[in-house]
Image 1 (tube, each protein chain N blue to C red):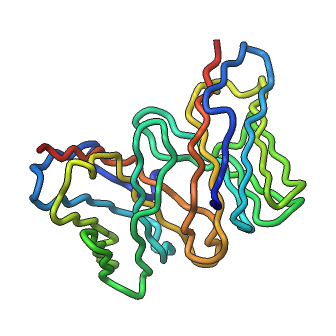
Image 2 (cartoon, chains in turn brown, cyan; image 1 turned 30 degrees about the vertical axis):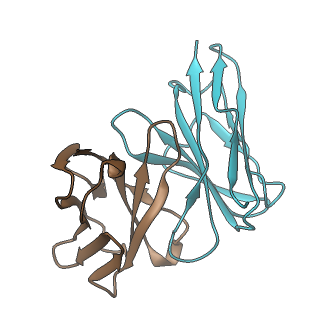
Length: 113
Length: 112
């Protein structure tokens, strides 16, 4: 039973345009959401997070939106750069057991020059 | 610099052998985790430890064992009971609330 779903295995965008990566979840107990970026043969690096008490969080070119009623979150990257090309993982946790992250399968983003 | 160190980066094991993957952190984090990544898959939790001398099974603990004798160290043993051990293994740690985990660079294990 996949509790965090990233339904698009890959996404390709042009440099300078917006990249939108989507994530859906089924567990209504999740109250903290994170995005990680991963290059091949490396560990994931933390990108941005959002608590369920918010619906938006921004950090530079990266913005995460949370729609709790739809159990959906998205990561927007504006403008996209070739260095953003990587696999992006969506992850979620339950506050009471905040040590455990549940990950989606990831979306491979390719930003073309 | 603080961080998480996994070693070795690449590891080859013969079938039927146990092998131990090392994970050390100097971030003073309380909790540590082991994840496994397979091609086209997300990260799946093997074991986690919230405090020294205590650990819990994750979603795919069968065939694996861990220990947490020191706060800084959380080694993972892949035993011969693990049916399909070839994978990329990631160690992570967290300080407190929010689940923001820091990851090591990973160990790629190949069974030959």
